[in-house]
Length: 282
Image (tube, rainbow, N blue to C red; front, side):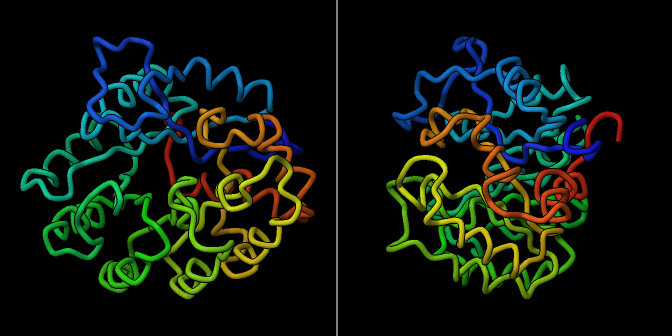
């Protein structure tokens, strides 16, 4: 472990197999159609940066096929935790989720627009939300800031469910909100079951590391949620999702460039994520 023996957890990674035949790509986002970013490559980056564990989210290009993420979990469960994707409109979605959790997954990612053409609070997805709550899962919610009113409906409905605001509503350069604002995410801090993933600077700043003019956004989030409900993530593969900086620079931002206190660093760089996810030895 690094950081004075405190566990460091990378809370946001995506893995892409080099085996296109065994793990066919079922969606067509052009930026990742040919990307290879394996678990082994991630571990090399982690080791070089002193990162102990990681959470990986099955990427959208595989749609509802979680095979690669689950196979990586089976091979590396001592340092890898996995969030899976399940079709929120599928009648058998809750059953599929339970099966994946029984195989070792510890969380669910739910996509809103633009990936899915349904609202977060559409009744068709309620059975999946209910199953996640019954299984006591962490839900990683990937939606834009303008969908946070729908999110609030779910937060009230499932008040015991741990929900992470993925990127605080910043998803990609094409979906950048008008002007850098964190207000919609901060407004949800009043719900104690909500957590914030501070992984948005590359997109929000639309500039290169260290994004100095936008550190205030992270500070506002930490002050609103408290460090115990905030977490860092690398956006691996960083050359696709955070091209403004390297993996090492990404964590360096929170270690030494953001002006975080020792306690804030401890939570944001690891302890918060460690309360939300499970690994093979935990």
